[in-house]
Image (cartoon, rainbow, N blue to C red; front, side, top):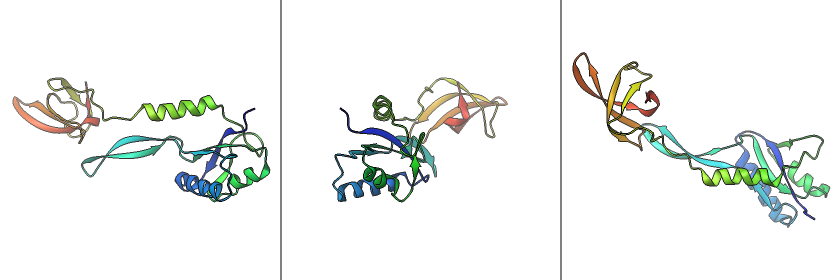
Length: 175
């Protein structure tokens, strides 16, 4: 018979990693690895533009929640988890919370490992695009260059009969 189940813990937002590390340290100190084998904070890699540069960052999929695989038949295990600084409580009915199906956690883990959010590369050189925001909103042009790392494109725009090259952010363009 399976001994442990997955549970969702509500924690203070932005304290997910701190709760995870604190719980893992308590579990190791008390030799409870068999009863509480895993603490999980699902994250994915995203690309964010900041100060003109594209940077890789981790993004939590469920802010304010930590998943824990635990045997809660012992009240000691429940107290180890629930009395951890930053933990608000178990999610679900009753004080013990509701177990989450292993298949749901596996689906989360699979989605995190399979997808790495990449910069949007749907645009291609030579393609005609419309500018949907910014000072050149409403203009159309042809893509001459694409800088995937900066999430920008060089667009050749016809302005009153003159061809102008403009550097436009991806967010401002649509096919």
